[in-house]
Amino acid sequence: MPIIACVAPPGAPVLLGVLLPGAFALGYALARAACRRQAPPRRADDATFATLHVAAMAAPALRAGLDRDSARKAVRHLRTLLGTRAVALTSADAVLAADGPGAGGVLGHAQAALAAGRAQVFPDEPYGAVVVPLTVDGTVVGTLAALDDEVSAALVRTVTEVGRWVSGQLELAELDASRRRAMEAEMRALRAQISPHFVYNALTTIASFVRTNPRRARELLLDFADFSRYALCRAHDFTTLADELTCVDRYLLLERARFGDKLRFSMQVAPEVLPVPVPFLCLQPLVENAIKHGMRGRGEPGEVRVVVRDAGPEAHITVEDDGAGMDPEAARRLLDEDPAREGSGIGLANVDLRMRQIYGDGYGLVVETALGAGTKVRLRVPKFHHHLSVVE
Image 1 (cartoon, rainbow, N blue to C red):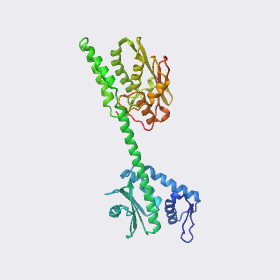
Image 2 (tube, rainbow, N blue to C red):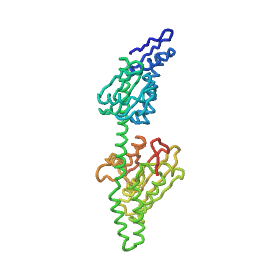
Image 3 (cartoon, rainbow, N blue to C red):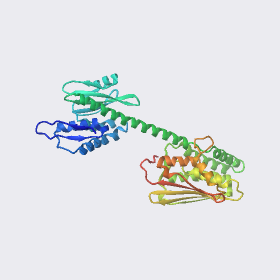
Image 4 (cartoon, helix red, strand yellow):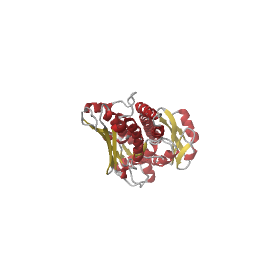
């Protein structure tokens, strides 16, 4: 492992630090800064800890991307890493943030480095400067500039390595943003897969009442409009459990009109869980699935039951039908079905995938079924989750 040492002024203590190979340049910067301040001696692991700690302080801001706010939060820590008189972060056309004397006037140097595409040294007075381009996916997005009394070869190497580290954090920020955008697009696509069969059946049912019971047809048409407005026009990924249950109720009004007395439905809900945030359209597809499989091929009435319980840090939801049930292997295939496949609707696979994307694999759907024994689908929702917010 490399060893970094500095020669202190006469009478000053000497700092000796053993650094991890990947932190060599950062360790050099800290050692250099400590020598300048004539810091008291520290053990080797103290130097390593200090280097990693300061890098960890700068990383979260840089993982947000390069803008004025992230630069302002990171620049002070970068100055500590480099141990120089001043440090600045710039975009292609502006100084985003600066810390230390003279750092605000480095834009001309930054633009020269951007034009050259590599590190540039400027031995100006009263401070020299080292300016390093910052890149994301091969594109230069800004620069890191360090100003100091003297520009040495060691300082150039250190600023270059710190610049590479900053570029790495910005690359990770872009990957995070890309992953977020992909997930949001996928969730919007999944959410938009309202079953065309339900729309067709609902409109057919409404049409059957137009001549025989116009008032009933009008009421059902308004219910269909309310359901469609909620299902198709809502702009956010999360809603409250209360709103989701209201959507289920609108849906059931239409299905009751279709099946009449053949469909029985009961709902038991703990009032304290009504404000809990839940993924948008996570219950209606389960109820639709229960009706579809519970009523298929039955001459006698079928029943669908929804139970929502308070389970401490979670809300536990079950949707159960007393239909013919299915082979457990068939249920597994339903969960494995590609939700994006044409004709797959917005069934169990859709909800299962979204739940696992949001909360983790432990929160996928649990399906209990057997031939002749009906089907029960279990859903767990954490009451509090740092990714969730309901925006009205």
